[in-house]
Length: 198
Ligand SMILES: [Zn+2]
Image (tube, rainbow, N blue to C red; front, top):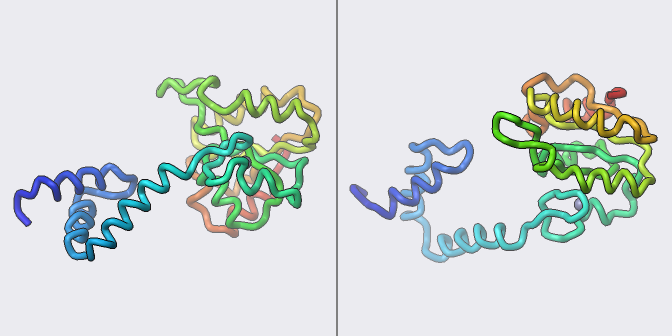
């Protein structure tokens, strides 16, 4: 294909996805020409469905198709244990370990003065509300240990200082700069089980 505006458009859109460089984007765009029309339609429908059906859980803010999410409604999970994470991918990573049976609170980001992200931009009001409702005995701070993540953890420690519960953080198996969803299940499981007072 030479000088095809539609192929170039598609490639440009695909290149906007994380982890997709311009070369891969072009290869994927050209691949569309080789698959049957009904497959292309199914792909387009899948993309629309994900956007239409997936929303945030009103309780923990994780991405889910049912609100409240399956974790929040699961009565078999430990109601006294709450893990605070940055985003939904972190919940997915921890869930894959099978090592955690409590609930989650997704902040929806980290504090970043440089990018204009302040406390009001994170899901902190709902976190405070969950603390007030009581019934919690431990909050696990599991924000990714990046520079901004550490600042966020510090902020959370201050916020939780007067709460009558244990505040812990993941063990240091996760290096500074690391992200929860980059680690294999064993490393992450060790970080969870070896958590320490924050
Ligand atoms: Zn939930």
